[in-house]
Image 1: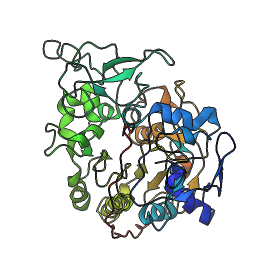
Image 2 (image 1 turned 120 degrees about the horizontal axis):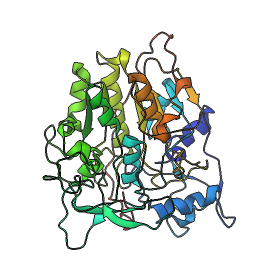
Image 3 (image 1 turned 90 degrees about the vertical axis):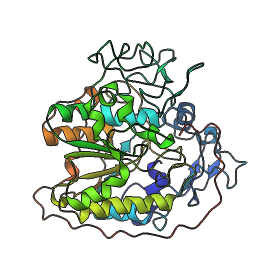
Image 4 (image 1 turned 60 degrees about the vertical axis):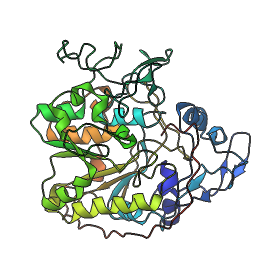
Length: 421
């Protein structure tokens, strides 16, 4: 989801942050009034082509070019829509009680696969296209990563011709007798890049990836929701002892309540297009907001609250309207559309809106600076690490009250056939 889609209306009503404008002028001069979205998230295309069309060179007026967002829709232009604070009470309450950054951008104009690579490695490693797809004549495995037997669009240089290669970041240190292609299912030109998981492991710091699609720690993945588990995209993680840190997301609340969380956690909703808490296109926004509330409550009431920082964000735009033009990453790759970023911590500044431009690399930079880890690459080495959003001298903030709203049954959304998730 974009920032304006989730928090823009709330910002406009309280002047706390950059608010959703009352009207939007599309390319060609069409003036559109943003509409309140239904709880069941409309299904919009959000491929690279959709996002490039929407951004329109920074004009942010190409939304009619997004799949399923057109004047003939009902309501017209459903991608130009918003959720009210009443529809997403938990994330708006957290944004008001703690800190947020209303200039945080996804790091790629691509859907989820690229967004998750950036979140773990501060690099898209040449995967500048859409999500992985089957290779002709090859039986698919599970998920999107090194065990999927899928291919993804990749280019050796920015702007170069895209080619289909295994959707896997290989690890040349793996035994060639067992992994002849570094963990990929066939030969690949993709080069190794380090991850935050590997940095934590090397420093002896415990971490976990709370995800769907696994039933035991480090177990084999299954189901569409396994696609969002970022560990399998990196052979260094999947084909080593690191994979034991991939655990069921249903463990998170108990771990938080019991004070057994590791130093660093990635917590993914029950994801993909059918995941009940993902807030993905075609799912209930309220169900996902309820889950955000459950995660926050477990942390706020757990014994480790005093040493916790929770960053809540979205991997891509969805592809819903946003007014702010994205920039360029330090490595020269284009940034994607602005996304929500809320920081929940006893040392976050209360009710603070950080306007400093940030990306997923900023979360990595915060992690690296907190634990004394080396940067992964150029994108996180100089990234803004939310220094303005924290005050470690203040009296620790208490938790914010969360709610569990009822979710009305609704008809299924007709999925856009071009929706790449």
